[in-house]
Amino acid sequence: MTEADPDLLARAQLRERQGAGARYDAPNAPADDLLLARRGTAYFARQLNGLTDSELDAQSAVAGQSRRHIVAEVAFQARWLARLAAAARLGFEVETIVEPELFIEDVKLTATLPPHALRYLFQHSAVHLDVEWRDLPREGWSRTIISLDGRAVPINATPLMRALEIWMAATTLGGHWRLSDIPAVIIKHSDIADLRGSAASGA
Image (cartoon, rainbow, N blue to C red; front, side, top):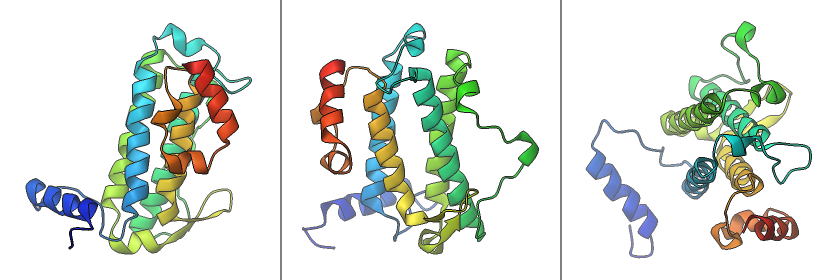
């Protein structure tokens, strides 16, 4: 540990305060990407909480989609990534559905849920994903899982996938956000022109 590693030092100090029974990320987990994803989740939650129930019905910044659709898509992505992480944790090679007969992820249908149910879906899915990440052992982060649609997904890439999705989703909710709120790495991976246009309309 050196003075040049403030983030590592902060994480080590946090682990000491939390004690042996606390959950924390494996040493080889992509810490920067996890932080980016968790910050994005908190930012999206603030944007969502800033909307009234009736405002959820309004058009998002994505053509043809209401704000409700954005919330549903974000929740379903979290569920998907949580399933991949769970597969890696359990030593599976493919994404697995525990109860196939109950597996229904229809964005259009979910977007019609009552506001409180839609908000809860986002909250629960975000917590579930974070728990799966924290419970993932060292070897789990080096695994690649085959998704239900046949894609090979490296588990250590999932935090950045989540970060990109949720930060961009926060901008499309059409709430009160600023371009300066968005981390540089997100802007680097995104269409800056679209972001600036959305920021102008959401300011």
